[in-house]
Image (spheres, one colour):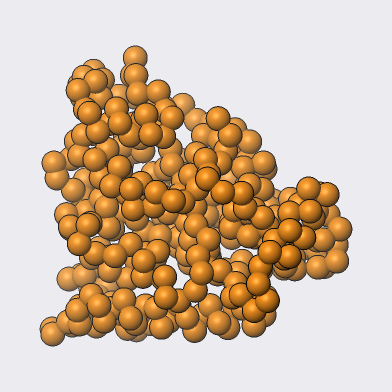
Length: 306
């Protein structure tokens, strides 16, 4: 299977290289295919059409931090990691009482808190300012969704808007969803102690995962396994989908990129890793779980555990 599962072709947008090369050198380093796609994109985009905000969505423990670090290593990109203004993770904690740079959290954690609609409006206004200022200097805004807050906690994930929905009136969006074999992410979630929903079972996890995929059904899917097997080609494809100029030297910058959410087996080396140990009980649970079977089928993964 290719790295991208998509319904529509995507083309890279133009831009300068903010790291090691001049804009002229960056354009000169593009392949003929990239130049052709760039020319097509520029010819098709109406004059004055605003630049997009890029968003990336994934469940916890699916390799999303590593991919996000790769995106932050692309020219003129500014990535905000683990964004969700409606997250309840920090409410009723010390963080909500002392957050001098976060008026949304302070307002939601106040004695008489604002409602979710107000929080969403505050968020949209703040993102709009940042997006507008970055556009003036040719920079690209990327938001990494904290999907876990919506779909993997004890909140009604269907009763609140997704991050993409909250941004719909701010700017056009270019989005991707990244996935990993659900057994691997489920095992890692358990090992990290992130049992934030109940019942904590493979069936419930897969049911929530399917709901997440349904919320982003028209968005391209990138498999973590493809990324670690061929990081350069997969990252090039991601950049095309998100309309970002691809930096062929991006892996050399990974060690300098620090992001929240780096909870897995850390390191800058990009390579496949062995599956964590699992019990016979999980094998039986996987066999009995209809949602898990449906999830593996939808994502193209083998559901059988041996």
